[in-house]
Length: 76
Image (cartoon, rainbow, N blue to C red; front, side, top):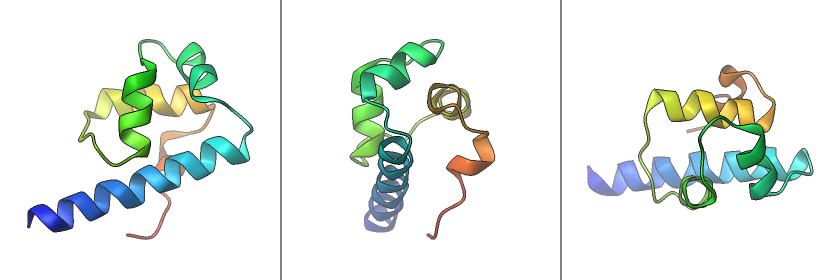
């Protein structure tokens, strides 16, 4: 079960990093565009090392300039 969760977090993180790089944004720019994210959080999410809250998902979407549903549009 733990292994599956880790794989899902890594896939999500890869998706977020891909979105960010396609938008030509640095992690710092995502942080500046958000309300309260810090760079370590963005890095942890992209590396599949953080299981985060819904409010963090909303703030990450804001930082990327995307609708939250776009962050969830990827293959599990």
